[in-house]
Length: 187
Image (cartoon, rainbow, N blue to C red):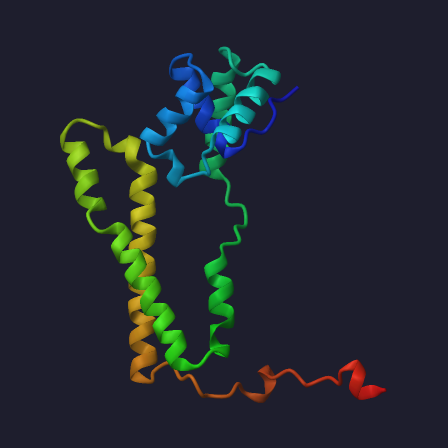
C-alpha cells in the first residue's frame, strides 16, 4: 500500500523530525527559526496534528524517510492549479476608477518592495557564512517571484500612466455580453 499523501506542513515536520527526535513544540520552534512559516501556516495545532498523523501512518520511524523523499519529489515536480487572490483582483480592477486602480497597484508595489528590502543581502550573508545555497532555494525562488511581480507592476503602472493601457476604451462588440433582463424586469 502506498504511503499516504503528506501535506506540505507534515512534510516540513517530518524533515525536522527525521533530523532528530523532539517534542512537537520544539519542532514548531525549529520550523519558525528556519523561517518555514514563510511557506506554510505554522501554529501548535498544525504541528501537533501533523505529528499525530505521521505517528498514525507509521512515518515517524525510518519509513518516514521514503515518504518524505517521495512527497518532496511530488512537491517539486507537480504543477497543480493554484488560486491566489491577486489575479482575481486584477480580473476585476478594470471596474474601479483609474486613479483608484493606480493607487492600489502602487501600494502593492511598495509593500512588495519593502518586504524584500535587504533579503538578497541577508541570503548572500548567510551563504558567505557557510550555509549552502541549496538550502535557500525556496527563499531564492520567492525573491525572484517577487522581483518579477514588481517588474510587472512597474510596467503596468507606467502603461496606465502613459495611456498605453487605456482605462476608458470599450471592448469590441465581439467581447461585450448582451444585457439580460432581471427577473423583476420580466414580471
